[in-house]
Length: 75
Image 1 (cartoon, rainbow, N blue to C red):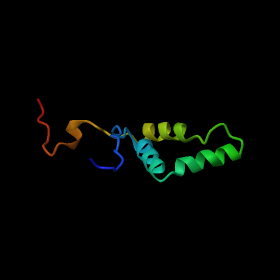
Image 2: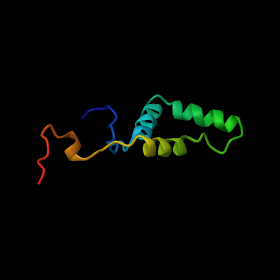
Image 3: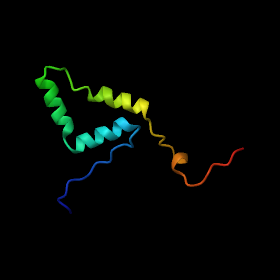
C-alpha cells in the first residue's frame, strides 16, 4: 500500500468561480484571504459570494453533448 495521501475527487466545476476556488484552495490563497479579512475586521473575505457570481456570469456547459466531437443531428 502507498503512503501517499489519497486525492479526493472534486465535483466538476460549474463555472469560472469554481475553477478559481479550486486554484486558490490548492495554493492556500483562500487561507490567506480569510486571515486578511479577519485582521481587517470583516465577517468573511467574500470568496463564496464572488465564486457564485462568477459561476453565474461565466457558467460551463458540463453536458456530454458539449464535449462530443460528433455534431448532433437535427430532427
